[in-house]
Image 1 (cartoon, rainbow, N blue to C red):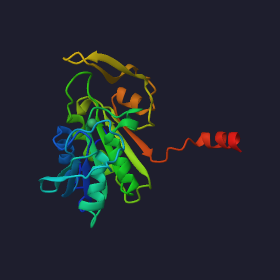
Image 2: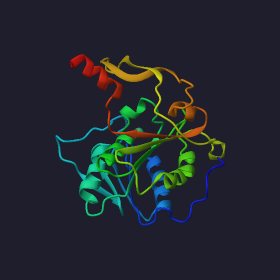
Image 3: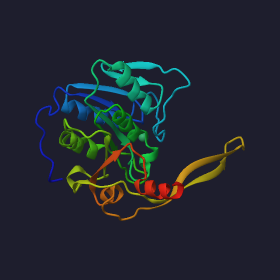
Image 4: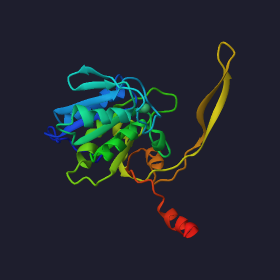
Length: 264
Ligand code: MN
């Protein structure tokens, strides 16, 4: 990738960074992101789910207590969701000095298009945005049925984070970054694009367990990636790192006038 510049020593020195994810405290992608965070600042904290919480979206645990377990200096796990971890970190553990930046990832697999609505990785950034903290969710796409190689994310993320982070981060902005499964030198560059949409169909597979009891297993099928070049899907498919600004307001703005017309 040609537009990657060497980083100055600790470009976010003095900034407090909180690292989270949805794959859990033991996930290799988390360790890779922690390495990147330490290359940016010395003040790095990790609060991550104790076990994998992928596709738990922005869920919050309110009907049972949470346990906070210390895994090392400035490393903690919560037996809850990715969102619980952000709340515990910001409203409890780091309440006297809140993070300046929240990083989520590196997720084991892409979070593109409609994945955003299911993603616990993106939800970490959403929760940070609700606290008014700049937040970047980062995911490493994998080749079909291959183990995830975090080399592209690990190599390229530090520069992207340092370039994205600003003191005047817009309110409610969160940023969703996806890395293509290419050797870093083969990545074409970094491009900003909108959230895309797959021609996908979520479905259910029926089977039976070893005792003969039927089960249903949700999966998604018929994944034809549109070649829509400006979307996150199109950019990553063409070998770019995609960067998509997201916000918390789910309002369908055209729908405002339409519904006003219907309801008066
Ligand atoms: Mn995940």
